Image (cartoon, rainbow, N blue to C red; front, top):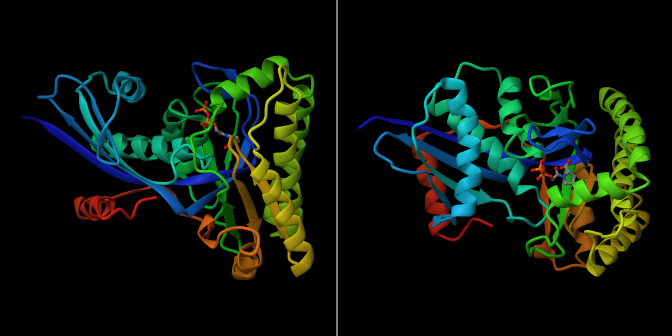
Length: 343
Ligand code: 2P0
């Protein structure tokens, strides 16, 4: 029996300049470059075991064997690597999500980044992180950014070979993020479907592309100068512009729920009351994320808990790049799963 094992952890990321739209669906080439903050609090641990004795791929998420449809997504992803090395052993893939799955907290980002790094580790692939990000991208676009820590840019590139992520800044300068979980149910419109419909039907879409490019340049300048308020203002404006494209799609749709609007209003009230810089952003789900100074997180959390149950306000510092785990680390993660400590 020949086995090749790799284990990795990748943290999720929240886009401050959103990725919204593909110019190539098969290659996951985006319509615009994006920029994110990797979060320490949410991550996925994945172990991949390539085993000559397996007769098909197996995928377990949080200890439960997944449906054929889910396995097919993983198999397709593994095929990409195996094309690269020229052979295709079957694999057992085990993932533990320390991220609320499909609640708009981008669990696919940490999932495919962890899987990509675990595969690279198992197969001893000789490739740079940036090159690996082009593989992760084809599992889920946003996962390309989760291979790196801090502020990360996914440059749209000109082809599959250069549409890759790279680190911009380690975000080690009093940065934090609060997540207001207003609804942890699975999203109704997958982002993949939502973005395609928007590209095809929103008359505002060309303006999105145009201004996302300008926002990215301005944001990179703000990060270079550690200008938090400019960074935050661009974040909030860019996110709302993305959601304006869904409202202007035909037929229109939105990821917001009534509670999302209440959460937005609470953020406006609280930042006014405390006079602290705090900026909202939302993804393909109803939850509201707040970019703030790490040193203000406690005060903001306390003030927001008047409006929301405290357990629904999760705080996070910037997170690290994805990294390889040992078998002992993996056993610890499994222990936390059985103890019910995963989210
Ligand atoms: C982002 N989102 O930049 C944007 C903002 C959601 C809103 O990336 O089709 O799951 O797998 O490439 O990465 C969510 O989309 O989409 C996403 P696919 P993905 O974070």
